Amino acid sequence: MIRTAVRAFLGLSVAATFATPVGTAPQATTTAAAVTFTKDIAPLLQRSCQNCHRPNSIAPMSLLTYEDARPYAASIKRRTAIRNRQGTMPPWYIEKDLGIQHYKNDISLSDAEVAKIAAWVDAGAPRGNPADLPKPLTFAGANEWTIGKPDLVVVTPSVSMKAVNPDWWGSAGFGETGLTEDRYVSAVEIREVNDTQNKGGSTSTTVGGLFIFHHAIMTVEAPGATAGAITSGWPIHEVGRNADVFNPDAGKLIRAGSRVGFPNVHMHANGKDTTGHLEVALKFHPVGYQPKMNERTIPIGTGDIDIRGMEVGKKIESFQVLSQPTKITVYEPHMHAAAVRMCLDAIWGSRIETLSCSGYDHSWVRAYQYEDDAAPLLPRGTILRVTGYYDNTPANRNVVDPRNWSGLGHRSIDNMNILLMQAVTLTDEKFQEEVAARRENLKLKPGEDAPGCPLCAFEKLPGARPTQTARPQQ
Image (cartoon, rainbow, N blue to C red; front, side, top):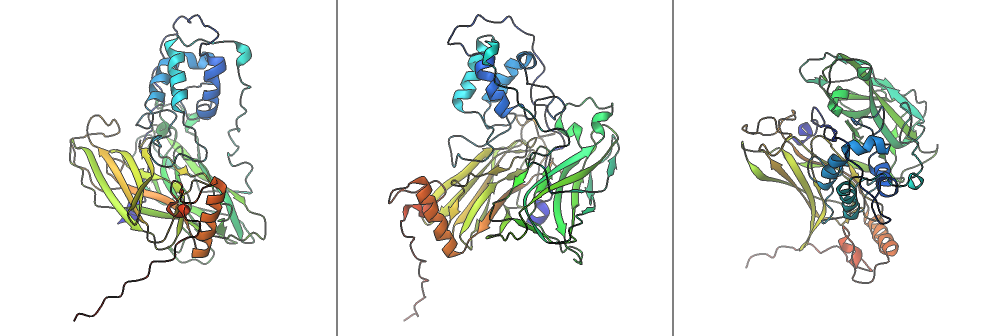
């Protein structure tokens, strides 16, 4: 049931990021201490917004210049103040007051930065001194990749969708790698390439209106593999999902002569007759590289989903026990339209710790990669608890008709409760080495632990607890 449930992803359309432009109000008189666009706001937009909000990207408007941003000032204030809830911008939903706070490629704004944006807008959104502007960013071209120049790009066959068509599930086919030797992959990036932006028709400004692939599960098929004998654990393509850079010690193997493809995809119409395909960019480790550990995807979820019409505050839990010491590297919630929040807790002995909590917006499915010294290090026997929260009322704009009951299903109007966790299982010896390195890097004192590392409090790790043997009855 869970394996089937993992194969449904993302909503059919992604809401436009900001509201309709407001008229440009008269610029307020600034003082030396005033918050201005050039000095204070432009650097925030560069770091957290402009990767999408620029010409020929997926956002509906550019925020590169003052002239671009000023008409949207009120909307920028409103959307950034939402924080981790549905509709926030930038789309980063980790809760700031709970759990681990250190993630790679974190585009979120701090409380102080959100307050700075509000102060700028409330003051009339002043431009400021042009000399204060940071140097404009240089973005990758349309045909370039965020992982840098790839060593190999695999292209899948083209597929077409009519402007108005039912959703479709099936295979998008495979592309040949042409590899003559085994190679280990260090990074992978997947993107859809189609002709939709060169056509008129749909006036949709949503991300869903630009693409026809709702999700696509990447697999690698080695030569001579029987049907279904494919290598899993690769990233899943979703609209807006970031590239994957794997643990340097856990490269993923592609054997010589393998094919890369997507035997399970969900496609949808976008209002235009569209033809497109998927491209997979791969970066390799040097020849001769050998991984030290195996990083894999571990889904934790349940198909026992029962959400009544007009129900708010619904909570659904699922559990998994770690049979080996484990280092969690990626936290990626996956639910559907009615979902609004997910939390991951670790239970070890009498200790219950929240590792990560995030809001959820089915318009933006996000993967969160822990910083190296923040990735949870959990001993064997730890119980992981995944809790999903749902709002099936009109307050949740992603729900089409909140009067309807909802259970497990593939469609976005159905629901799921899955954590797509990426993790590395460790030997006892390697786990001890990782804990010792974490203690040293964080400069922990005896008895002092760290978030997500319950045994970091020990200078010498306690041994395994002896198994209790039942005594014979007298």
